[in-house]
Structures are given as C-alpha cells and as structure tokens.
Amino acid sequence: MRDGAERGRKKKLVVAFHFQFANQAAWECDACRRSGLETKRRCGWIGLEPQGAVWARRDVAVGACPKSYVTAESVGLLEEFLVRRQLGGLACEELSARKVEAFVVLEREMDKERAGLLDAEKGRR
Ligand SMILES: [Zn+2]
Image (cartoon, rainbow, N blue to C red):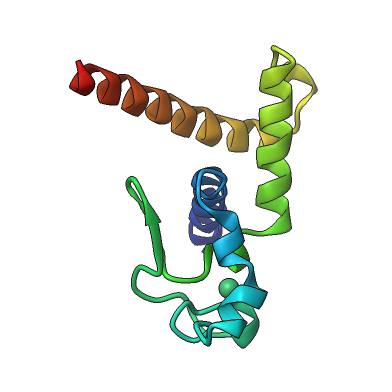
C-alpha cells in the first residue's frame, strides 16, 4: 500500500517533469471542456480513473489529462528543483527526506533528458 502510494508520487513527479516540455496550453482543462475532450482525456474533475495512454512523452505515459494528473505538490517540488539547480546547488543537508527522494527522481529524468539531446545531436551529424 505504502509502496503503491510512493510509486504514484514518483510517477506524478516524472509526469510533471515531462509535462513542462509539452504544449501546456493545449491541456488547460477549459480547453478540454470546450472541445468536448474531457471524457476522452479523462480530466481529473470528472472523476474517472486514469486509463490507457491519454498523454505520453518519451517513456512516460499517463492515462489522464496530465494537467489534472500532476498534483500541486509535484509541481511545487519540480519548481523548487529547477530553481535550486539554477542557483547551483541542491544543498541536501537542509532538505527533508521526502524532498531528497523527489530530487533524486527529477535528477534522473534530467540526466535522461540530456542524454536524449546528445543522442539527437549525434544523429544529425
Ligand atoms: Zn483536462
């Protein structure tokens, strides 16, 4: 049970990380609603369980509108991660265990992202 919740939290973080590279405006739930896509996209506010792959990027897929899938907590952690990186240090000693755990997950995604970019560059040459 705890494992499940933990995996869920990690997945939300990973989705939050990848969603920042997406065209987020296309996933505002108002837009989903206006185009009648809220059921197909399984937006959070209609209360359907995530199912299938509604949105995907690289090796992450999510069975719901990513906008409503990620939580305020995961977005907050992602923002803090990015700001701290920008400032040049994650300063682990002042972080809670939960944040350290989250930042490790995000750091791994960041590494994969960089590796992917390098591969793409090599491919072009
Ligand atoms: Zn939506």
